[in-house]
View 1: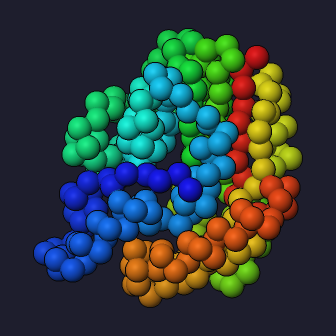
View 2 (view 1 turned 120 degrees about the vertical axis):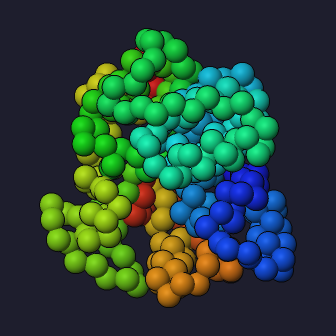
Length: 268
């Protein structure tokens, strides 16, 4: 697993009023030894990290950075990170997280469809569960291609429509989207075939791709979601569900359809 560092006491507890010392100590232990207890990020992280193949001094744009856990982690490995997102609470917490970890990440408010950077600026772009939130995904990939150097990459993840949920059944309410998708601000879901077609139509090479959240990890994610709806915190469930999610890595091939897909597109 790609072990992300602790993301900072303020970020970890800012939504809680006077958390108990026991809860704080337990969460600190989980964050330091396993990573941020978001199961989806844990199961996709190894796929993303392998595709990214990070090297010190690479300059990478974290598009749609959210809480910024990837920017923090990659900068601790010696990469130069620029993180962009639209204004939202998580984005501002990401900035505080970088300050807590003493990491000089550059944060900018920007639209992924019109990035405020010169051509050929970055070695790569990461966009993790971002494209489905952007009205024009083609324009977003095209503009990301513009700001990376020749031979540079875009590494991303997207939700797919190719595997139905196993435990939590949800009805499609609009254009292939569920109520949860709409609440999350999704404009679409993907098939891997459609995603690869989009990449190749922009004259980029699909250098790596595959699925995650296939069988065991999908069940683990749905169990997490079920208990989360009943107000059971992620950090309590994570140590039990993570080993189940990891089973996919050892027995399921990447071409087996899952509820998430990753890709690495290279500028040629």
